[in-house]
Length: 116
Image 1 (cartoon, rainbow, N blue to C red):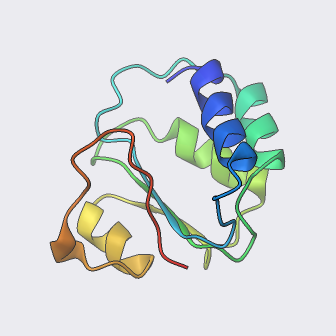
Image 2 (image 1 turned 45 degrees about the vertical axis):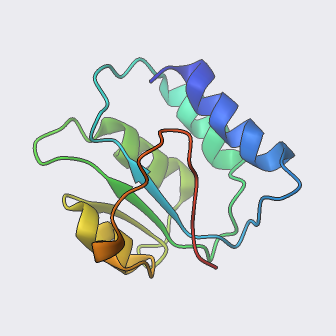
């Protein structure tokens, strides 16, 4: 993950007229192999967060993975623990945002989904 990718994702959501800022989000960092982002980029994206403050957002990462990106994002957003949590298990993240964990994860990497 790079600064450009992080900024591009947020900009794409903000620019999409179909995007609903009230959607809930699950971000999967399990396949992250290299983290090449700066605290400045995380701060910028957090300040331009396309989601409403009351939208639940779950970050999923495997146990033992470097939690820097999720912790930085949490700090820069001033995240409310009732709206932003980091999970070690995908099922728990899905359930927390209101999705059925048995539904599974989308198979396409470019799919974004959520529930309002």
